[in-house]
Length: 567
Image (cartoon, rainbow, N blue to C red):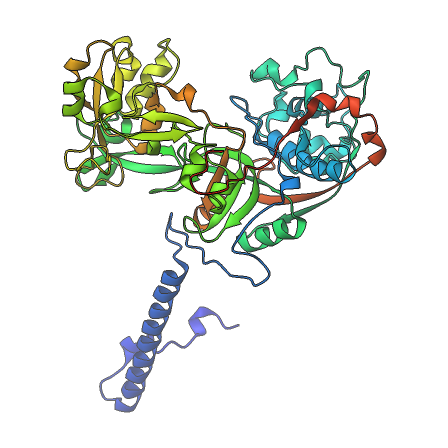
């Protein structure tokens, strides 16, 4: 290859050209014209490609590839479905997602061999699996095997905690974990962090008087990485897929003015983010509400990691996406049937009203309430949740424990309504105020979106104390979001309208799904991956049904006879 000084470049040498060389000058202009045209063509192709791919930050667009071999909507068969369980305050999502995979296979094989009835499943112990994994990794079960030492030094295991593990460990630990899967009754789940990771009510799982009735062998692990291949794997295996991924937050830009809870933070003090309203602060919220639908807004922000199970998809719903079995709580999300479009919203309200979602809160008419002092009349509407009548406006109270802590105060301020962080503010009843523009038929809340808003808003509320309804006050929040409102307030009568065992499923569009995976934080053995495990059982172990009798529970999917069916 010649040196750069030897490369002939007529454009570079043009400075030495003389006007008395017309032939060479004409050739030079021809070349210049050709290069200009080629540059314009390249630019046009680049712009077109960017438009097609739509890979601008936070705006990944996934086009569904309709395969003739796959239905547009699908969930795994009923004999592979087990109910959602709640991990609560502990970082055990990967344990719950792992046990869900094992329970799914166990239900199918136990029904087929007659160990349980078709409307039953065997609940396995997340607590036992987590404790045994800890013991295996800290050397108290046996000397830590060389081939898993690297895993044992990663995440929470390296610190003696169940936080931050991986679903795939069930495969990589397969030489040692065949009897780590106990019936739930042997070792029920403990919600406490720390020492709770190690508890098992005095049962010695290392030297048990009764061994696990299930000898489980993980034969193989299949992993996929694209929506289409994941769907094909779910359809081919007819089972759930384990998924480890980043959890992202939505981002809003609050103007640095008196209505912002963050006017005194670093973003505002240092004028870090110019915006339409002068300067703004970046505010990150969760990417989901209690309705169980993941969405992104603005610049995605990393909020940690999570593990769940994908149990199906629906390409005719909410912009197409996956149906996900979560482990946060039954009191969020919806049923699989709802996300499949198998039944009406009225039907869904009888099993999964998700009454803590702001989408279910009916606002109150101020003049009506001031005159009648009866929330059930203002407005006059009746809904039915879990077979129980729910009348009128939704009366709210400040969320959280009654005791005031510094955390309570901080959250109330950050979420946009500081009075929920003090005793006086928490003594009131609240309701969303009905917008003045409504004719009474749409029940819209009075929400102001300031000029330049990217989704943040000011919510207008009514508040009063019991017995003093005639003096109801109009108040308003600072800048906040719909998701923050769900953290600030909760329905006063929430305990009357709780979700059932069919709830806790979430929905994520493919666009949001790919955005989560694109921004997965790689640390230790973290990586976005979607795995199916092939599990075999020793059928002879099912003979002693007494060992799992008390962990055999009834579960079958709800069936509605019509759109207005209560049952």
